[in-house]
Image (tube, rainbow, N blue to C red; front, side, top):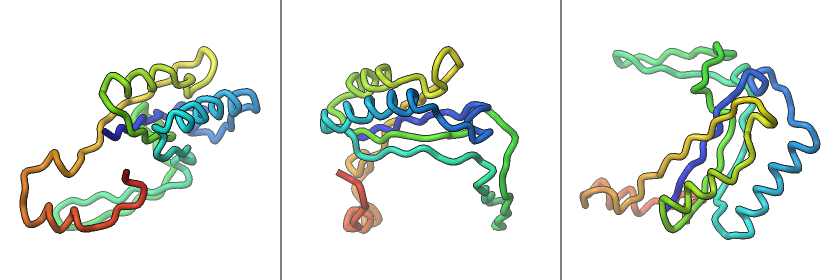
Length: 138
C-alpha cells in the first residue's frame, strides 16, 4: 500500500531558507534508509509558493492566481511516497523522519494513503483507467 508523507511548510521554507549542510545530511541519511529498505517510491521538496500558481474552478470558469500566497500551515513544502505492507509500517517510517522544520522549530508531516484500483467497484471506467500506464506506480 502506498502512502504519501506530506511535509507541511514553515515560515522559513516559504521564505526560501535552504537547509544547512548538516540538516541536508540528516535528511539524506533518512532517505537512504527508506531506499535501502525498498520502500521509497519518490520524494521531493517544493519551492516556495512565490514560484507557484493556483487554478480555481467555480461555476465552469477557471481563475489563475500566481504566488506567493499568504502563509498557512496547510501549504505543502515536500513529500515522500512510500510503498509499505501496513498502515503501522507507514506510521513507523513517518515517526522516524527528521523534523522537517529542523531543530526545535515546530514541524509537521501528514500521512495519507493512496487510493488503489482495488479500492473501487468494478466498472468500464475503472477498466479503462486500469489499462493506462502510470509512471512510478509499483
